[in-house]
Length: 213
Image (cartoon, rainbow, N blue to C red; front, side):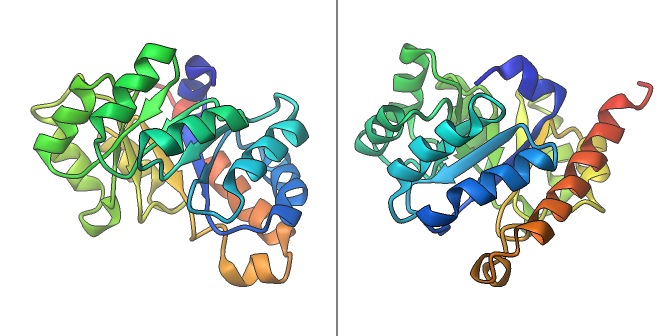
Protein backbone atom coordinates (compact mmCIF):
# COMPACT_ATOMS: atom_id res chain seq x y z
CA UNK A 1 0.00 0.00 0.00
CA UNK A 2 1.27 3.42 -0.96
CA UNK A 3 0.19 5.57 2.00
CA UNK A 4 0.87 8.76 0.04
CA UNK A 5 -1.66 7.69 -2.60
CA UNK A 6 -4.14 6.89 0.17
CA UNK A 7 -3.74 10.44 1.48
CA UNK A 8 -4.70 11.73 -1.96
CA UNK A 9 -7.92 9.67 -1.94
CA UNK A 10 -8.51 8.79 1.73
CA UNK A 11 -11.37 6.40 1.09
CA UNK A 12 -11.48 2.68 1.86
CA UNK A 13 -14.01 0.03 0.85
CA UNK A 14 -14.67 -2.85 3.26
CA UNK A 15 -15.72 -6.15 1.69
CA UNK A 16 -17.23 -8.87 3.86
CA UNK A 17 -19.00 -12.09 2.96
CA UNK A 18 -18.49 -11.89 -0.80
CA UNK A 19 -18.20 -15.09 -2.81
CA UNK A 20 -14.75 -15.96 -4.14
CA UNK A 21 -16.36 -16.48 -7.55
CA UNK A 22 -17.49 -12.84 -7.59
CA UNK A 23 -14.06 -11.40 -6.81
CA UNK A 24 -13.09 -10.42 -10.35
CA UNK A 25 -16.34 -8.65 -11.20
CA UNK A 26 -16.40 -6.86 -7.85
CA UNK A 27 -12.82 -5.66 -8.08
CA UNK A 28 -13.29 -4.46 -11.65
CA UNK A 29 -16.47 -2.60 -10.61
CA UNK A 30 -14.80 -0.68 -7.78
CA UNK A 31 -11.69 0.07 -9.83
CA UNK A 32 -13.92 1.37 -12.61
CA UNK A 33 -15.63 3.60 -10.05
CA UNK A 34 -12.30 5.15 -9.09
CA UNK A 35 -11.68 3.51 -5.72
CA UNK A 36 -8.02 3.17 -4.76
CA UNK A 37 -8.13 1.07 -1.58
CA UNK A 38 -10.12 -2.01 -0.61
CA UNK A 39 -10.09 -4.25 2.45
CA UNK A 40 -11.24 -7.87 2.46
CA UNK A 41 -12.20 -9.08 5.92
CA UNK A 42 -10.64 -12.24 7.27
CA UNK A 43 -14.03 -13.57 8.40
CA UNK A 44 -15.11 -13.78 4.77
CA UNK A 45 -15.18 -17.39 3.54
CA UNK A 46 -11.92 -18.19 1.72
CA UNK A 47 -10.62 -14.73 2.60
CA UNK A 48 -6.97 -15.53 1.89
CA UNK A 49 -7.77 -16.89 -1.56
CA UNK A 50 -9.95 -13.87 -2.24
CA UNK A 51 -7.16 -11.46 -1.25
CA UNK A 52 -4.75 -13.28 -3.53
CA UNK A 53 -7.22 -13.31 -6.41
CA UNK A 54 -8.12 -9.65 -5.89
CA UNK A 55 -4.46 -8.66 -6.11
CA UNK A 56 -4.03 -10.69 -9.29
CA UNK A 57 -7.11 -9.11 -10.86
CA UNK A 58 -6.15 -5.61 -9.74
CA UNK A 59 -2.63 -5.78 -11.08
CA UNK A 60 -1.61 -2.82 -8.97
CA UNK A 61 -4.61 -0.67 -9.90
CA UNK A 62 -5.99 -0.78 -6.35
CA UNK A 63 -4.43 -1.46 -2.94
CA UNK A 64 -5.76 -4.72 -1.46
CA UNK A 65 -5.58 -5.28 2.29
CA UNK A 66 -7.03 -7.50 4.99
CA UNK A 67 -9.52 -6.49 7.66
CA UNK A 68 -10.98 -8.05 10.81
CA UNK A 69 -7.50 -9.31 11.65
CA UNK A 70 -7.95 -10.67 15.17
CA UNK A 71 -4.69 -12.50 15.84
CA UNK A 72 -1.11 -13.02 14.79
CA UNK A 73 -2.32 -16.13 12.93
CA UNK A 74 -4.78 -14.01 10.93
CA UNK A 75 -2.00 -11.52 10.23
CA UNK A 76 0.41 -14.14 8.93
CA UNK A 77 -2.28 -15.69 6.74
CA UNK A 78 -3.29 -12.30 5.32
CA UNK A 79 0.27 -11.27 4.53
CA UNK A 80 1.02 -14.64 2.95
CA UNK A 81 -1.99 -14.07 0.68
CA UNK A 82 -0.57 -10.73 -0.42
CA UNK A 83 -2.40 -8.17 1.74
CA UNK A 84 -0.60 -4.83 1.52
CA UNK A 85 -2.17 -3.30 4.62
CA UNK A 86 -3.92 -4.52 7.75
CA UNK A 87 -7.08 -3.36 9.54
CA UNK A 88 -8.22 -4.58 12.97
CA UNK A 89 -11.52 -4.00 14.80
CA UNK A 90 -9.73 -3.40 18.12
CA UNK A 91 -6.36 -1.95 19.19
CA UNK A 92 -4.47 -5.26 19.11
CA UNK A 93 -0.95 -4.21 20.11
CA UNK A 94 0.69 -7.49 19.05
CA UNK A 95 -0.71 -7.22 15.53
CA UNK A 96 0.07 -3.52 15.25
CA UNK A 97 3.66 -3.87 16.45
CA UNK A 98 4.25 -6.84 14.14
CA UNK A 99 2.99 -4.76 11.20
CA UNK A 100 5.29 -1.88 12.12
CA UNK A 101 8.24 -4.26 12.35
CA UNK A 102 7.45 -5.61 8.87
CA UNK A 103 6.82 -2.18 7.36
CA UNK A 104 3.12 -2.91 6.74
CA UNK A 105 0.60 -0.05 7.10
CA UNK A 106 -1.83 -0.85 9.91
CA UNK A 107 -5.21 0.64 10.83
CA UNK A 108 -6.16 -0.58 14.33
CA UNK A 109 -9.77 -0.16 15.40
CA UNK A 110 -10.64 1.92 18.45
CA UNK A 111 -13.57 3.82 19.90
CA UNK A 112 -12.80 5.32 23.30
CA UNK A 113 -10.13 7.99 23.80
CA UNK A 114 -7.94 5.48 25.68
CA UNK A 115 -8.20 2.95 22.84
CA UNK A 116 -7.41 5.61 20.25
CA UNK A 117 -4.25 6.62 22.11
CA UNK A 118 -3.21 2.98 22.67
CA UNK A 119 -3.64 2.22 18.97
CA UNK A 120 -1.62 5.26 17.93
CA UNK A 121 1.15 4.54 20.42
CA UNK A 122 1.40 1.00 19.04
CA UNK A 123 2.40 2.49 15.69
CA UNK A 124 -0.86 2.89 13.79
CA UNK A 125 -0.67 4.38 10.33
CA UNK A 126 -4.14 5.71 11.09
CA UNK A 127 -6.64 4.79 13.80
CA UNK A 128 -9.94 3.34 12.60
CA UNK A 129 -12.70 4.89 14.74
CA UNK A 130 -15.41 2.25 14.84
CA UNK A 131 -18.38 2.11 15.09
CA UNK A 132 -18.35 5.83 14.35
CA UNK A 133 -21.95 5.81 13.17
CA UNK A 134 -23.18 5.50 16.76
CA UNK A 135 -21.89 8.99 17.51
CA UNK A 136 -21.60 10.73 14.14
CA UNK A 137 -19.09 13.23 12.76
CA UNK A 138 -19.02 15.37 15.88
CA UNK A 139 -17.38 12.50 17.77
CA UNK A 140 -14.38 12.81 15.46
CA UNK A 141 -14.28 16.53 16.28
CA UNK A 142 -14.28 15.77 20.00
CA UNK A 143 -11.45 13.26 19.62
CA UNK A 144 -9.41 15.71 17.57
CA UNK A 145 -9.47 18.14 20.52
CA UNK A 146 -6.85 16.30 22.58
CA UNK A 147 -5.61 14.14 19.70
CA UNK A 148 -4.99 16.73 16.98
CA UNK A 149 -1.83 14.90 15.82
CA UNK A 150 -3.47 11.45 15.63
CA UNK A 151 -4.75 10.38 12.21
CA UNK A 152 -8.35 9.13 12.36
CA UNK A 153 -10.41 7.14 9.85
CA UNK A 154 -14.17 7.20 10.39
CA UNK A 155 -15.82 3.81 9.87
CA UNK A 156 -19.51 3.04 10.27
CA UNK A 157 -22.39 5.31 9.27
CA UNK A 158 -20.45 7.10 6.53
CA UNK A 159 -22.53 8.06 3.48
CA UNK A 160 -21.92 10.20 0.39
CA UNK A 161 -24.17 12.89 1.87
CA UNK A 162 -22.28 13.15 5.18
CA UNK A 163 -18.70 12.61 3.99
CA UNK A 164 -18.08 16.36 3.91
CA UNK A 165 -19.17 16.72 7.54
CA UNK A 166 -16.83 13.93 8.65
CA UNK A 167 -13.88 15.64 6.98
CA UNK A 168 -14.85 19.09 8.26
CA UNK A 169 -14.92 17.60 11.77
CA UNK A 170 -11.34 16.40 11.38
CA UNK A 171 -11.49 12.92 9.86
CA UNK A 172 -8.35 12.10 7.91
CA UNK A 173 -10.08 9.30 5.98
CA UNK A 174 -13.42 7.51 5.78
CA UNK A 175 -14.52 3.99 4.91
CA UNK A 176 -17.71 2.25 3.79
CA UNK A 177 -18.84 -1.36 3.89
CA UNK A 178 -22.23 -3.07 3.91
CA UNK A 179 -24.04 0.13 2.94
CA UNK A 180 -22.40 -0.22 -0.50
CA UNK A 181 -21.68 -3.93 -0.74
CA UNK A 182 -25.32 -4.69 -0.07
CA UNK A 183 -26.35 -8.28 0.42
CA UNK A 184 -29.19 -8.02 -2.10
CA UNK A 185 -26.92 -6.50 -4.74
CA UNK A 186 -24.29 -9.17 -4.21
CA UNK A 187 -26.89 -11.94 -4.42
CA UNK A 188 -28.15 -10.51 -7.71
CA UNK A 189 -24.58 -9.86 -8.89
CA UNK A 190 -25.60 -6.25 -9.40
CA UNK A 191 -22.08 -4.90 -9.63
CA UNK A 192 -23.29 -1.91 -11.64
CA UNK A 193 -25.25 -0.56 -8.65
CA UNK A 194 -22.28 -1.17 -6.38
CA UNK A 195 -19.98 0.64 -8.78
CA UNK A 196 -22.37 3.59 -9.08
CA UNK A 197 -22.53 4.05 -5.31
CA UNK A 198 -18.76 3.70 -4.95
CA UNK A 199 -18.41 6.40 -7.61
CA UNK A 200 -20.60 8.71 -5.52
CA UNK A 201 -18.25 8.25 -2.57
CA UNK A 202 -15.19 8.83 -4.73
CA UNK A 203 -16.68 11.98 -6.24
CA UNK A 204 -17.62 13.34 -2.81
CA UNK A 205 -14.16 12.75 -1.35
CA UNK A 206 -12.37 14.10 -4.42
CA UNK A 207 -14.48 17.26 -4.26
CA UNK A 208 -13.53 17.78 -0.62
CA UNK A 209 -9.83 17.13 -1.21
CA UNK A 210 -9.72 19.52 -4.16
CA UNK A 211 -11.57 22.34 -2.39
CA UNK A 212 -9.46 25.39 -1.43
CA UNK A 213 -8.14 25.17 2.11
